[in-house]
Image 1 (tube, rainbow, N blue to C red):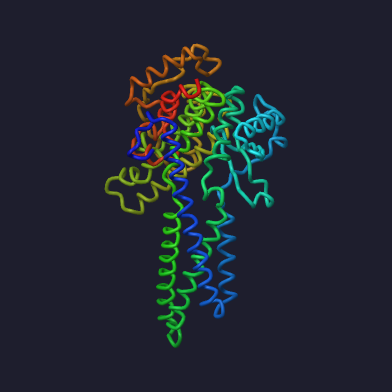
Image 2 (cartoon, rainbow, N blue to C red):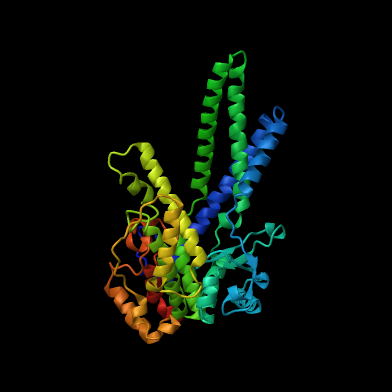
Length: 441
């Protein structure tokens, strides 16, 4: 959260005010950037259009195509086309009915498509809301992975889908909804930058020998790279947003208001348990157990004393290759059903062996962490969920152990990573709901 916030002990109304202010600020800067881009495009047409109309149009369309092909939208299959065994406890008709019910609770006229992301074993749920372009592809959709469909009870599933609908209907920010404007804006900026580069350097090559031309070409390429990075940096600053954690907390609140505090908490606990399993795998390939991915390159590069740069780079490369192979293997073999860390250990070991076979990497056997295990409070282990009485005991221990991570997850153990993460820690999300429970008691 923002550093001046008292989160998680802050009311949802205060948080809503913060998010609404951020949305208003974001829209102001967005329209300012759009206006500036229109002015730049008009300037290009006037100044460069008569000189390089076809080159300019070609550059513009090429950048549009390049950026458009890299749009980060989940891939999945419509639930009505999905294998029934991957839908867990639900049918396609039930999922559509649930999404329709949730859409109506948000006064949303459009009912999103429902997609199954069947190539992941993680606790995955996401939403896309794209205005105008939905006729090209049914992008307006909720995406969900099989793990949640296999492990969540109906109220829990409604809670997680309600969280996603909150993003879709209330807090899906300007640049996510109008992502295609970012593509056009970037294409305009790159076209103008390259046009100026061509204008400034074209005369340098006339009359030069081939050696000088090669040197000049290298300098021009480096200058072009610099201008491209500047364009990217400016647009990134103008389109960045600093309140994503607040938005996540608010969407948890909306889900709890509709389907109950316990439903959302149990979703968070099952999600965190799954994420903990994947983090435990990645930690096997990193010297830094508390920052397994972020600390991999820096920590591994210093592991071999006296090794030259090339040897260190090779070691880092091998660790990364092994980690990726192990992750893909675990994603493939991990059952969709709920597993504790202990139950997942054989699958983690098999995945690690796959990674080690893929590259000559090192495995790190870190000491096991003694985390606050929510399952210790669950007297109905087969259900994998807390009831009201169990929740009260659990939440008291959570409050009384402020420095004890809830899960073996990097963000739970490292304050810097927690501050940078897109989502609040699971512990803070639960404590925020507890602090505001009177609103949906």
